[in-house]
Amino acid sequence: MDARVQAQSVLDPTIHDTPERLLLREQVLRFVAREIEPHADAWERDGSVPRAVLRRLGELGLLGLRVSQAYDGAELDPVTNFVFAEALSQSTYGGFVVTVLVHTDMASPHLGRAGTEAQKARLLPGIVRGDLLSAIAVTEANAGSDVARIRTTARREGDAFVLDGSKMFITNGVNADVYFVAARTAALETGSRGISMFIVERGTRGLMVGQVLDKAGWRSSDTAELVFDGCRIPAENLLGVENEGFRALMQNFQRERLALAAMALGNASSSLSLALDHVKSREAFGAPLWQRESIRQKLALLDARRRALRAFAYHCAWLDAQRHDCVREISQLKALGAELANDVAYACQQCFGGVGYIRETAIERLWRDARVLSIGGGATEVMLEEAAKRL
Image (tube, rainbow, N blue to C red; front, side):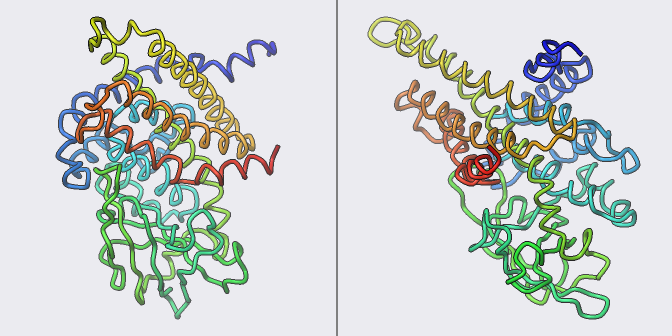
């Protein structure tokens, strides 16, 4: 392949716009416009997304884009999946977006990657339909980005494992039907070599929702502490190989961080769109704000940065699709995207003046929702360390 063509295929996001991906993007954008934006204020107050909305996404085939066709999925590639995530993230309700993307890109992939045929046959079709909501339970109060230091334990007792401990900041934690839980199956001193993954289903004795967490942003996403107190599960609920759960987590982190980058891109795009509409219609000192050179130039620069982020994001999705080692690039992308989303939301909110500080305005919500993007899924500082180690 000519080097210039290859460079274009990697760096120009429009080169990935096949007819099928364009149709997918339009389908998702219509869904967001018709079924999310007019209704989600109530979900922000209630603290969760209605299950009927998730089932509707399932009916449209949008919850299993990368799941094998054997389990009712579409078995599509990472670039197409990123098209879905980016379009979904055009919603101004980040809590709705993260509810879906945790289910599709952060939790259920552990089952698709490491599950036995019996485990997948029993759970994946329901996950794809939206009948079952999934969550990933790794973070603990004293072990966030340092996954190797988790303390929740799983000890073998005959034909069962017994889990004890707690998890914190678990998205979908209140309403999930199935949790993919990281627990220690060897001494703490073994670090990353002593972690395993387990399937724990709602209603299992010894599994309790502790605190329901009241967050500043992502208000329509339910987030909870989970408590495991003598939680006994069948031994066949081990997910993958015992003591190799850390490897599984690391493998899926790239997909998780791509999804969070899509959220950052969507937040920045929506913030800019709202600000442009506002400054072109809002008059101050006898003229629209758009007539102010400083405002025009600020928004132009932010848009340039957003476009650069989008090109880099599709490059990273392409690298993932080609099975390249892209930990450095995706770590950089996640850090860059999260910080940019915060910069854009802050600057665009400033264009609104006092109105931008009123609760339940879209720009105020985007500003609050942007903040957690530089914390969750790997803090910016952790992402930069991962990238620096590979420079």
